[in-house]
Length: 184
Image (tube, rainbow, N blue to C red; front, side, top):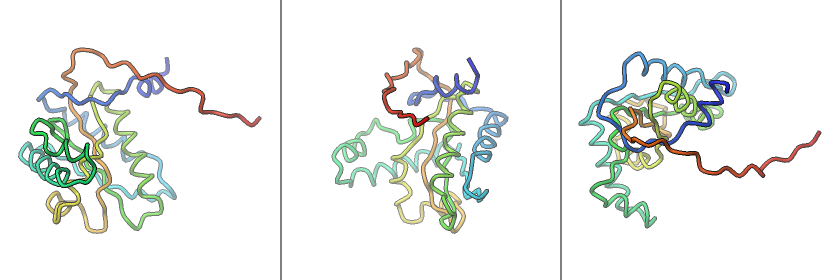
């Protein structure tokens, strides 16, 4: 099977990581893949904040959980109050993808960059998961400044990266293939 299609079909969200840090070389390749994502009008409106400092990762987790615990959404509130939940699943690396708010299609471009990051990580045997709940950290006053997000950029989503600590391979959930119509 084609290696790109193999990576697409085999990538799964990893939520259990080894403590070992990924190599600088692999991290550089993953970031470069994000930078090579498609972008409207070659705008390239993204910024990548790479966090590998365990104290900062714990701060992001606690701050996000504080916001989650105040949510009106029951399951989010419950997760925020769970002492065993960690918003980045204890991954040793977190990449926060931010977008230039004046960009033409910055959210779409940042989503494409995240997908490239996820697929390149898979191709290097590095586990990953796209994180949405980290957005509760962004809502905290001064959060963007604390992690060095440039002015004019808005944090979008994040990706946790690390080596998969799970022994068993995850199978892909059954896909609904009845979602296509052809006009030929």
